[in-house]
Amino acid sequence: MNIEDRKWEMMFDSYILSKRIKELGDKINQDYKGKNLLVISLLKGSFIFCADLVRAIDSYNLTVNFMTTSSYGRSTESSGNVVVKSDISIEDISNFDVLIVDDITDTAHTMDFVVKHIAKKNPKSIRTCVLLDKPSRREVDFTADYIGFEIEDKFVVGYGFDFEDRYRNVPYIFCVTDELR
Image (cartoon, rainbow, N blue to C red; front, side):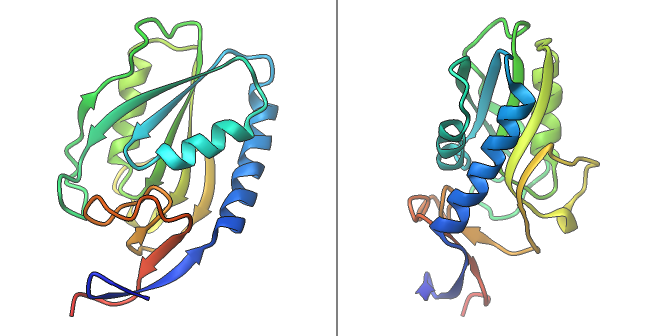
């Protein structure tokens, strides 16, 4: 397929995504059974993944909240300088086990920053979940507790991932296969 003068190919279709998210949900169910779980979705990228993930978690004792950070600006490359644009709206999280959900970990600057930021709020525990992991791009020593898929260093779009703030609504994930023409 051609979009924005680039060639793209499918990486994960909606069936593969939903199957893997159910598996993640099952594992999270086991790990958080009987706990007071706070899921923090990192916006904008994780909102679709997080919505599907929380529906795969069987706990009724689940709270969802949101946080917005930025390290990209309008670029497709992380600057490494992470800032909080909008913090979670719950003041006291000391009674919660926290699961931070993001769409992707590449350099890991964002997740490292967010984990440290949330830790200052003294939750019972903190774990992390990412849909995609790019370990080849890692600049910070970090491994998510729950990982959907490990991928090579490719630029991905769809299922929450954007290209210049578009294509987040595509129900599958595709990647660029060539450079700008």
